[in-house]
Length: 397
Image (tube, rainbow, N blue to C red; front, side):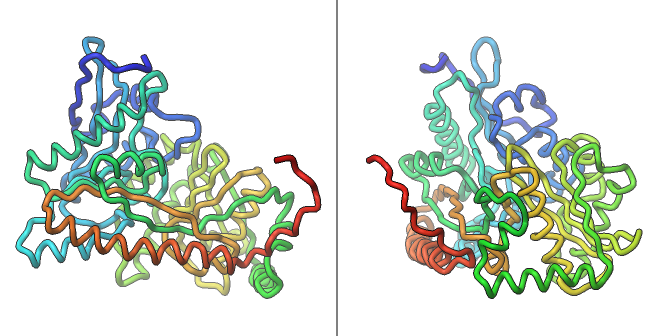
């Protein structure tokens, strides 16, 4: 069925629970991020984190065939009444719209709530024409905006091929960056250290030594290794960080962590720090297909360099041991760059209905794009990782 579909039907579905789990997950590829899994999205929605009451009304867009009603494409879609929890910041655009007397909210967002990860945003069955489905869904999103007098549609952290096709359909592309660590075939943590420049290598060794001095040990637990008692520590760890930050905002509920401990355990990876028998800190991570995704950090006790050891060094050691290709620790943090994480390009695509606002945003994105591209070049040129030695091996053209 790689050709044109006969009379496809596109419709919004209010909540992932109304879409059969096997039908949604049947659209996923082996290398799709775990955050697109039905279980993760359902945990967010069923726990009340991503719900109409919190400004995340789910209306997932689904393409079905006639007359079989088989789901052949979909995208995770939310009607938003604010811009929080997205990590592609458009607060300035909302302010500009308000000053111009325009209603910026509600708006449409294609993405996974509270989850800044790059991945496919348009999910397609393996036996359909993917380009056709992406165009069909994209045009439907634009039409929903226009017909319902919504200001805009935003497709956050999409894949490069999706962004390219969206630009051809009239969307504006926005570039951003995160810091990712890549496994350069390391066999142990010393191999990673050896790749760092001498100043940073000394700093990492000094920070790692602080753990021994403070009688701290780190354990990494995955999947069924995570006991019920440790699962119950996930929400307190998450809350510990939120409560310490005056700008902290609790997006996730206790029920969410209970749900992922039950339904999503297969992808969980906890990095936990103990002082004696006492749990003092940890991170809640997710892993799949050779990629580790850092998510939620928390600590019950403040110790020197504890954060760097738990969030980065232990996670890197886990990636090396398990032969994982990449570690994405999430948004923000120039300090990640100092520890061998290099800038990686991220993309989003935006459709704005109002011509004046669209023109203003396009100008801003043009200027921002130059800055992002310049930093990515500079970030790699000045990487804390040593440049690879020149090869003396001849290769054929």
